[in-house]
Length: 414
Image 1: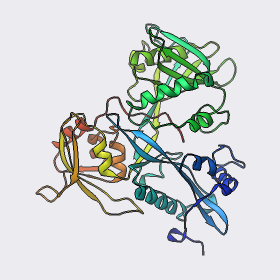
Image 2 (image 1 turned 90 degrees about the horizontal axis):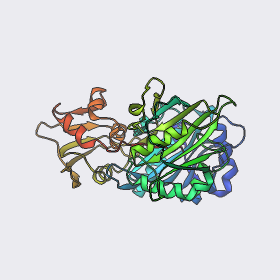
Image 3 (image 1 turned 45 degrees about the vertical axis):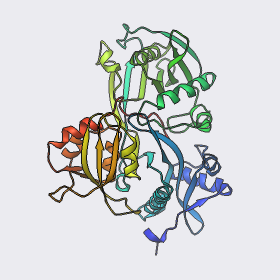
Image 4 (image 1 turned 180 degrees about the vertical axis):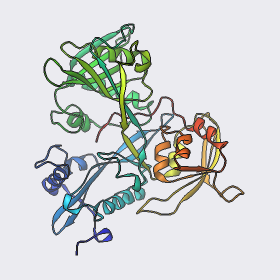
């Protein structure tokens, strides 16, 4: 009989298992040889673990996690477990391998006091049952070269070089952005050198890249775009991998710059945050447009009180909420009172329900993951049946308090 569920025993691997683990990851993503250059020793170098489930000595399930800091609304950052390289061998799907991996991995993070777990999903229907909700979304912007409708935008001072030339300046400026943009993850040196600027090709990274730095009147960096050319000669596209700035005018200037690169036909920015001013600024919104949007960062709240207490709230709020348990780790729900004055003071304590016997707000972990960074309004979550409120008059107060400025966004893949 094939083992299922509790019979699987996930364990962490040491560097000696580098080749076996990496080969198993590659097979899970449909490759015959390693493509991503990210193995057990790399994960250990980042201070975390590589997980595996084995069946008679063969690795049939993989996962890894590293610890990064995640920016919450208000600018505070909390340590989170970033999950990567999740695979199940095709012969072992629907047999509980992923359930076992997620239970072990999330359980370890809870024991260590991680505030949340985050991931980017190759498929959208997998992780909701484990408590993950879509915490950030990306907009895909497209415009024709020379027909972007942003001619009125001052171009400013922009320096262009091969990306590695500006590595240190980009890294330093992105750290500034990380203190302001909710959803931004810290990025260690190793990640910059291997996965952002490295030559290997994986997911949305790799290949020849260029960087365009925007500078203010004092010569200081106030924004940058990391981009590359894709497609056939004569119809090439400028693909912006990431564009970071704290100034909307700089964002417009950098996008205009990328939309005027010689010998290209189009510009695409598939990782734009939802509050980008570009579609509203163009004189031709049918050409310079949002061509689509997709989920990006998924978040599973692990330490609910910590997440609620560390972020700030845009308006006063006093509410008793009940958050469901964590599948495979702790099935008990938590009932908490959240009090915020809208100016920074926040208090989160255990609390009873209101006199009617019901909490004022109740939802599961995945739903809180969708709301914690302000990405999905509570009005939408209630209408979708994902959250329940004791009285509809509470919804405007929840939406006002949880709103994030700037909007949450993530331009990382892992």
